[in-house]
Image (cartoon, rainbow, N blue to C red; front, side):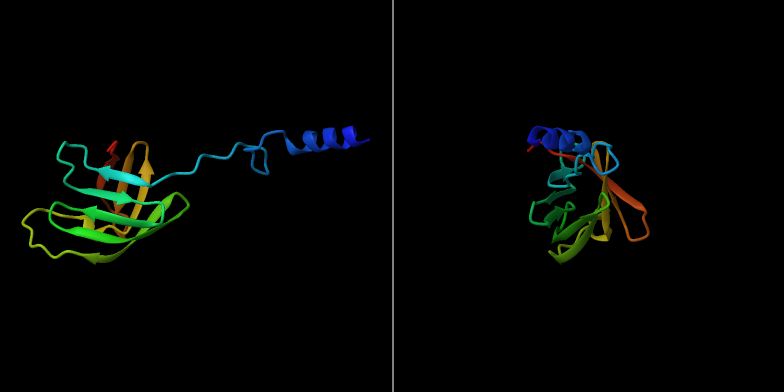
Length: 124
């Protein structure tokens, strides 16, 4: 009788620990954690997300700090502080409010959804 109960439970559970209620495999979670930078060797614009929900970004002139939260594969960024170095470069990091991963790139957008830039996962 116990063997029958265990067998029945296994049959109805689908025997797949990664299955969601409809029986399809669950997708791997998207991870923003780590260092992202421009694709060139200078890595002038970069941002690092940590596992505590904080980030630090650098746009070539200023350093930006803040927090982020992830929902539906999108990260919402909230800046809390920044340096104030005058810069003659075209910088855009301060305008970023959202990010999402597209293949191997991190796409950064403003509040209107306009793409401002792309960064790529850094190995270092």
